[in-house]
Length: 288
Length: 227
Image (cartoon, rainbow over all chains, first blue to last red; front, side, top):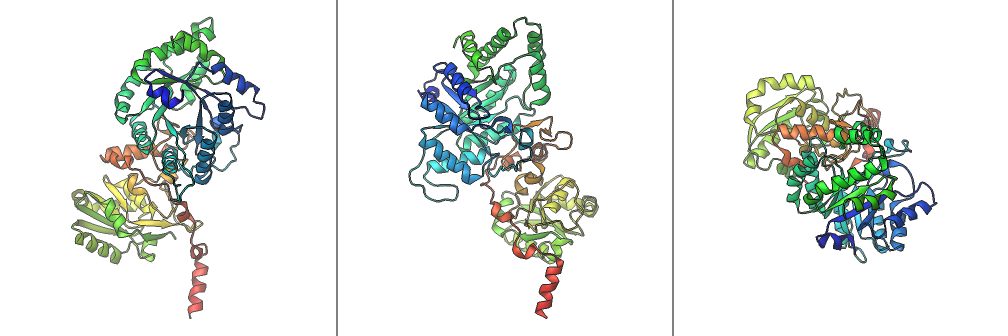
């Protein structure tokens, strides 16, 4: 079942993500893909996450597709101008890749090539607009295409941002530009997410709540200090601190969060960040 | 010197949709030389706006609109006229629009595009920076330039990378440009501007025209050839 069909069916949808290797050894990538096969409805392949140069999302999606998986092609506007972005959208389509997550992208200085020239010719909103134009059989320059692609377009939003109103304004613009589903930044406060969803519901899109697996109390503190829009409450940090079996605890917390927010949205997007092997256990614990 | 040109009048009129009373601000700095913001152009704009049924509550031509302190002093005698207006129309470069926006509590619309001259020209810039993109978007952003205030130069709103109003790229020195824009538009009761969907920017307009790649020396040489 495609992601589009899964979301249409009304079931609670689960997506996960894998970051391709830095290099051409795809063994671990394929192992992770195998771990998730049949357990989740789709797998996002990150686009040089955190601006770190590595194997690309398109190649990763293609590999996953070959193995019978349902990939979500993550695209950022950091490294490509509108010519390359539109071309890669066409490339994805001819590889049978339908799901595209349109992102602005982290700034280059956060990654491992801080000397690089940042592009940002388009942004998440105009990338969605570009994809929509291509579907209409023309490009951003208004030129006609020989054969038009068809996509299932997604975008990202940060429900934990403070203030959240600018995020909601941009979310509405993304929905207007063509986003049909949203995968959110990680959120650990169900009450905050509930308030966010009350507003977000108005845009008529499907929302998958973001869950980042917490490795340790130190990781949670690090995210609180350094990652925009993420706030892990003290209770969760303490819980993690006191746990003897940290791995078990991280699974338990993720499953609990999913269950607490399950009725507020249409699915969950689990970002394991290297702990992909724990995703099936999270789903079991959450009863999914 | 900063080179500006008047935007097509219909574009300016579009910015003023739903607004009846306008206060005009001109500039006797570079905009005087460019014939975009000196008194004759301001008066011409006044007439054009009045023909379109707008009422002009007053106008003021400031020596250098890029100098925020000066703008504040020069606009002081016009306080009542500005209070009576729905918005201000600023006839100068992007820096002047931003400097005015920073000192008045009303939405300021740009009447000009600032053309790229391909190098610095010795003006004193404060925190208001203009990318000279040739297609000014300050109307949508409460008079704060998203190309210079946002690290990524985004025109459609904030990315997810701001924390406590600071940009994650250099939090110690950079505020999030879109946080500033949001706060300003919210204060002005004009968050509707933030919901606008501008087309992808035409970066072709950002290239300096050939004649502006040169210096005042170039201009003198041109004059000499005419003699």
